[in-house]
Image (cartoon, rainbow, N blue to C red; front, side, top):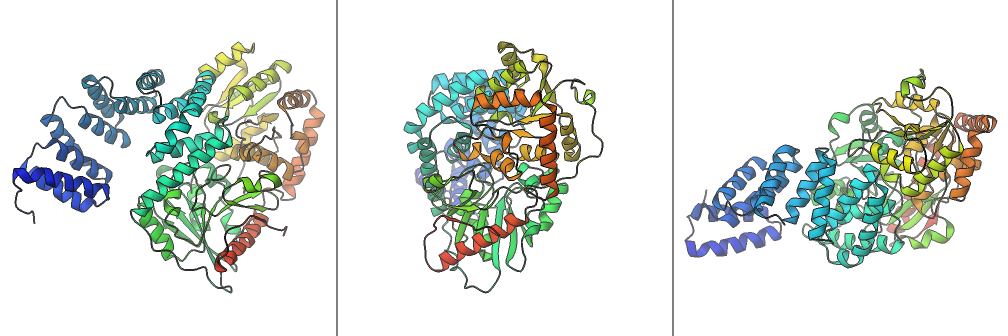
Amino acid sequence: MAGPKPRSDNVQRLLDQASAQWAQRDSIAAIANYRRVLAAQPKSFAALVNLALILAELGQRKEAEALYQRAILAEPRRPEPLYNLGEMLRQTSRLDEALVKFDAALALQPEHVKAMFGRMITLRHLRRFDEAKATCARALELEPDHLGALYQGLKMAQHRGDFADAALMHRRLAETLPETIPQTRLLMITANIAYVQLFAPWGPEIARLLSDRLGELILAQAKRNALTPPRPAPASGRRLRIGYLSPNWGNHPVGHVTRSFFQRHDRTRVEVFGYTTKDRGKDRGIFHADLAKSFDHYVDLTGLPPAQAARRIAQDRIDVLIDVDGFMDMVSPPILAHRPAPVQVFWLGHAGGLGLPFVDYLIADHRVVRDDEVKTYREAVVRVPGVYHPADLHPVDAVTPTRASEGLPEHGIVFCAFNNPQKIDAQVFAAWMRILAGVPGSVLWLTDHNKHSDPKPMLRAAASQAGVDPARLIFARHRPEKSVHLARHRCADLFLDTFVMNAATTALDALSVGLPVLTRPGARFGERMAGSFITELGCTSLLCDSTEHYVARAIELAGDPQQRQALRQTLSAALAAGRLFDSTPLARALERAFADMVDRAAKGLAPTPFDVPPN
């Protein structure tokens, strides 16, 4: 029952109390006090806006929208409720309505950078890319160090294939981060940039800077809802309980490569839990179904706050919790910060480690992390024999499409590069153009990634500037059926890998159907993944030690059909022998690794790097 209406002289005290309560995340008390304020002063702008913010965050968006509308009527010259409502509408995919609100806020305050930022993201999702880029530029004119605008500007440039703009954004971020990151309170933007740095030409000091601040922000958030520490590690003699945590148990690269992996665990040694943090909705098809049934227990944590998700995991008495996401969706680290398991591990989600204080171990192999690099990681690096990355043989359609049906020429060499456009930078594209110039009549077959932008115009312009006919860039249409997509790899002659971040799932797709992958291993974890795959398959002649070697080797293979055929035969023999695409040895290695990790924890010993011996 509502209490009596407060006197007007108590309203400010209630507002102050509500603000303090919300700062402590006591939403129930804050909501009650804001409602008491509105009972006394129905047009209180602060109460209307702040209550709407809380309700929107709690998912009560219908009432939040009504409160924002009341705030707009109460103070029609104030941009804040327009901006806040625009953000809520954008986050619920009501993009056209969101744009109207952002524009209205900017009409009142043309230099409202937050509204400009929301407008930019909305325009990008509406595929109005030129307007989005112009809005980003204007936001950076007003606030040159705006991390969100710099990040979004970089993301747009990468997805558009705008190498010059991407280089500019990389440089501006590298200059800005040392000053801005230590003070920032923006968790998600910091996480987004931590993920971007995997693709960026930055040194390790920036990665360390980002992980330092991320750890501080995540732990500060976790302290508000501290979790009782989990029980000690168990005594030996019973099955270990291992939990894999990810939002991507579905039609996603992580789901593709792990589709049958978890079935390979030895159930006499481990009990396997799968925790999902995302309802993948319409993409729940064969991948989701196969993954869900491959766990002994499949637990849906979708929508739970980190503390509640951690508490649910702790209830299962998990011995080893493995994060299979990292910075991609940034759902898992806030859960791990509550320490729901005695041993916590990062594996697979993306290349490299996380560098966060509540992650004990990183799973790698001897090729992606070399002997002299083990101690440079904050996590204790555990290297498995062979390849750290699982691979799965998927069904391949029996019908090979004709080249004509794929828009390819009937004759000539087809170089394939089905890479995420985020991985395609000026350096590798220049190498590809040199290869095309050195192989007359050849074409470069790229994926038509147009979800976030359309890279075709910029890439064609870059080809023309390099003296290559833009028509020699062929863009493959999206094929929703993976079996059909795999079958069309047979139309290609050689897969060309990227440099700054190797192809991973895309490289495995090519190798699984016998298409050779040419790669140039580099200095970082993400630049060595394809090399690890290729070495495991016994095709070391596809490893290049420099860009010059990479270009020369591609041209050499294009002109030597016998070498290409010999490589295909080597791949075919390796596949028949179960190399790389049989993940059972990896499952056994991880089980031994997890047992050693738990044994150390049970003895009170700190995590330490070690190599898992061969099976």
